[in-house]
Amino acid sequence: MTIEALIKAIPPPVVASAPFEGPWEPLEHQLGTALPEDYKALVRRYGHGTFFDVLHIHVPRSRVPHVRFETSIREICEPLREANELPYPLWPQAGGLLPVGRSEFGDTVFWIVDGPPATWRIFLCDRDVVDMETLDCDLTGFLTGLATRHIQPKAFLRLTPEDKLFDPWLSLGAAPAEAMEGWTRSGGYGPTRLRSLTLKAQLKPPKP
Image 1 (tube, rainbow, N blue to C red):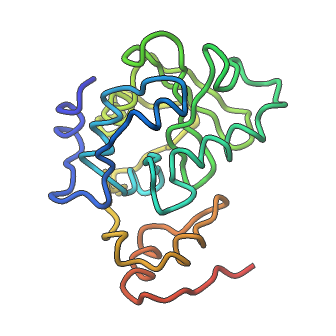
Image 2: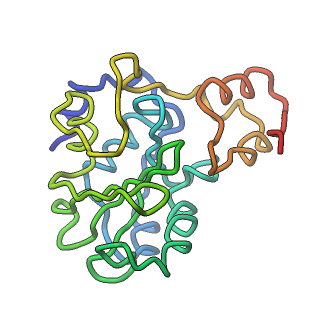
């Protein structure tokens, strides 16, 4: 799938919020692999935001810790290393799973890192490592398929007509760093909460 197909299905913001435009070489050297071109176009064109009201695609060098691509890899993969239920190994093993997105419910979108990046397929896993599914598409194809209802995962992101296709976050440059650090994996600040923190420019820690 191409970024053009995704743009047709999910209109991007006129001005993306804190998009990542490179350079990509340092990150790819750190990972030991090139990354898919459709993903690079995605984070450049859409930046930070929420797909379908619940799904966040990780962005390199993000100020939001739990959507930062580099941080999310460790946070998601390390607890799963002892899980025997997974049908694939975890990155950086050959053919391993590399996380690229996560829902506010803890469901994870992985790439299956096997072969050239343009051929990487998508693997879905819920937070309890019970419901899993392999899809024969790339990341932009997955998002496009969800938006058009051509892809309807068995137990992942059950969308409704009321769900927004994409909700961009306000400029992260105006948000206090403390607010970004308060974003939690267990639920996180939704777009509304993040906007509130940005506009008020003050920290209100989440209740225990």
